Amino acid sequence: MNIIFFGTSEFAVDSLVFLNASKHKIICVITQPDSRRDRGHKLHFTPVKVKALELGLNIFQTENINDEKSELFLKSLNADIFVVISFGSLLKKNILSISKYKAINVHPSILPYYRGAAPIQRTIMNGEVISGVTIMEMTEKLDAGDIILQKKIDILNYWNYGDLSKVLSNEGAKLLLKAIDLIEKGDDAKIPQNDRLHSYAKKIKKEEKYLDLNVDAKDLVNIIRGLTPKTTPILVFNIHLLGIIEAKEGKDLFRTAKVGEVLKIDKKEGILVKCGTGTMWLTKLKPEGKKTMSFKDFLNGNKITIGDLLKNKEEK
Image 1 (tube, rainbow, N blue to C red):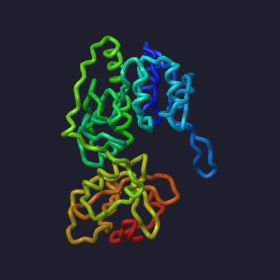
Image 2 (cartoon, rainbow, N blue to C red):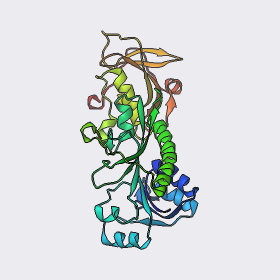
Image 3 (cartoon, rainbow, N blue to C red):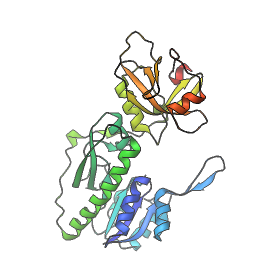
Image 4 (spheres, rainbow, N blue to C red):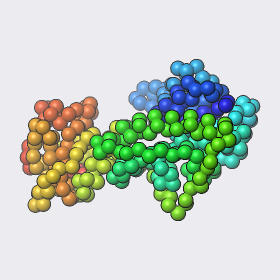
């Protein structure tokens, strides 16, 4: 089949690679415009554009994929099917109706659960132990189309957002090829989603990186896992911001200790801190203005003792 591939983030790259190596043909890659960021305002390409250039594929970028110019361009390509993965913009009816077959999407959750912008992060942050990928037909309603294929994935308790994203990206790419083959053969039996069961994974807000030590230790560990490595969770130590890159739940409760109090410093386990309920070991940290380091390296360069307090940002 002749395919137009819509994708932007790293999550879409595996599918682009798998499709390019298959019997199908990618006739164009649609990705978000280049951006300028960092101190020098250096021009950055999307991860999908970087890979598309490496593969020698045709690329199209636009500020508005739903405008008349984009519509005319897409129609001129006579594509059999649109594949949309982590593209970053909603496609309207005028665009979704262009290809011969209905557009399909790879979504990193078991739909109808965790529709929306941040399904992988929210899945881990909520303490789920199972995730997965769904191949679905696209409609104008967000992540609500009929399901073509699904695969469940067990979440290992030490995985963070980056780990689960890599697994789901790879599994989604493999499932995508199966779905396209089924569509081409006319064997794609579709299942409507049960809207009564749906839940939404809202986009991660900037303020969510600031941790609240007053909550349960298990919940805090899940939040840290769900945010990293894309977003650095933050606490405050000695008036400086301290990134918490990795942590694990402690067994000791220390009910009479203050929230944020350093309870133990163990050369094997880490730095034990009191939470609202329970305790957590800090095992990997990122001091303000420095690189990520193990707790051992942090202890070598920073004076921290039992009884010291880590604080929430608003207490800085």
